[in-house]
Image (cartoon, rainbow over all chains, first blue to last red; front, side, top):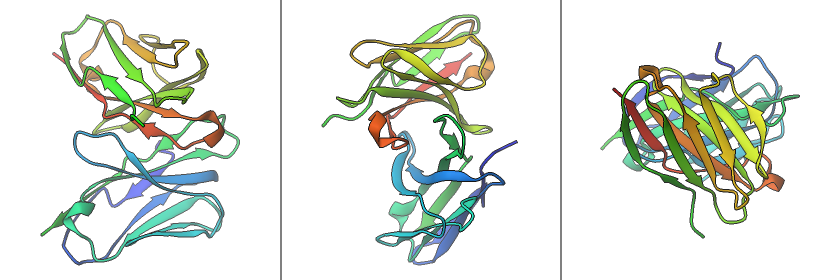
Length: 112
Length: 113
């Protein structure tokens, strides 16, 4: 059973479109992180959300942490080909002893 | 400053062999974690080392082992390789004080034939 469920698994859109990807769990997390991984590279941290209801913006990317700290979303406005990659959410369940758990990711392709 | 360096980048082995992967963390980082990434299972936590001690361990068989040296460099060893061990092995380092902020290397792509 996957502790963090990400949806959709695959997403292919045209440049300029908006999109939202989701990260859901039945567990409460102390914090959640979002990473982007490009082919042949390791994941790169985009953001960490800590407080329930928190919203963070990173240029065209908006991250939200659910009020109950069980879910998160990533919204991209006016997607560009450079946004193409695997988006991973990760977190440590509350009470866990420092063990980062990852979702399987959303593979985003932005076509020119 | 230099990022996390993993060597080798690619490796081809046959079933039954063993393999050792290396990870040099960012200078000053004392925590090193290892992950296995496959298309089917995604990123799965193998183990974490801090100050030469294994601090956490994932649900992998004993064929997977690791160690950390006094300079924080880490090695991961897989013995008696199986076809299912084919994966991208990622190493991540962090300053312990930063908690969960991890910096990943580019990984070692292991293919078991």
